[in-house]
Amino acid sequence: PFRPKVASCRASGVASRLGAMAGDEASDDEEMQALQPSAESIGASAAHVDGTSFELEAPATRNMFCCGGLLMTGGTEECWAPNLCVWTCILMPSSMFFVWVFPSLWHRGAYALPIAVLVVFSMTTLMLLATCCTDPGIVPRREVVLATGCGPALEAALGFDVLGGSGDGKEPQIAPKLKNAGYRWCRTCRIVRPPRASHCSDCDNCVLRYDHHCPFVNNCVGQRNYHFFFGFITSVLILAMLVIPSVLTYFSGLNEEITVDQMSKVSTAMRVALYGLAVGGVLVIIASLLSLVLWSYHVFLITTSKTTKEFQKSIPNITEDPTLCAPRGPALFDPWVQVDPDDMRRLRDPNQRPYSAWIRTGPSE
Image (cartoon, rainbow, N blue to C red; front, side):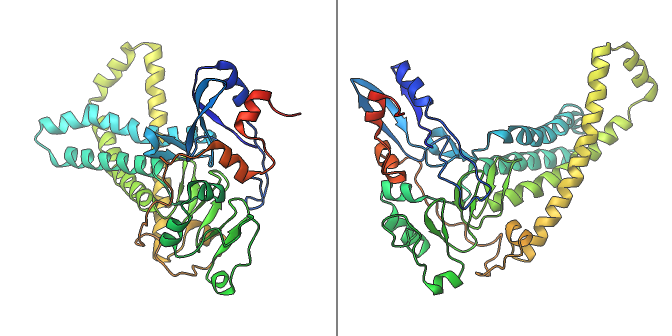
């Protein structure tokens, strides 16, 4: 299946025809599944067919790109709800603190806590955005490497040929020395991946030092963003320890008689909203306790130099590299590179017709 994306098109008929090509296949084995490119692309190219100018994108990943490729996130559309829950659990109690508690403490001359909460809140937000929108350590799949000609640069960065010396894309014979060191052939990306890397079925990419795919940040957590992820769960835990007790103390210190009198005067809709806010506060407290468990779990993983996948599946850390303090490494792909869409199609499946032939005649029966 191949999912082209029309970035700009002056012929609506061509756009609708291209959209009709979308399709998905699924398989239980993420290493044996068929190539399933979708969403945004790593490379784009302009095309001219029958005098009509438009841009085509040849998707090579499920990841979505924005800001001209500067930011990226995972390709699972179902993750918007967990991600929204995370932002709600952060913004709701923080907003209550900044609206009520912050002014009260500031007017009393107590500046330390408001400033500390402001700093930690800023760090939490930045760490969450960095985890959501940065490259986790994607290793380009075979057709991207061949279409962009980045093979030599990848070999220089990783120290081995990711194509495995195989010109036809078939599984090569990996040298015993490399195999014993943890190098494996990915049947989906058709590349040799380094130790501790793994294929993510959600993003449809191989990721360096793959930890897990987190639906709450809608991104993989890997070699290049794990420190952002751990910084986020650390800062959000500190934020909860500062904000929740302060908000509870502030509201518990209000005059009870005045509060009851004010509650009796508000409308039913406002009263329901206030009760809903109280229920949300309870959920936020529960989420804070769960974040403590998550933070403790990752502290354990860091001290044992294991990733989440290695711990859950009892996979040994062959390289013995640390999980947190290891080098982040360079990005292995260029989101701004331009490639010919026909090249991407041909490299995936030599039997597929080029774009120009498909657009002129339509899909074959």
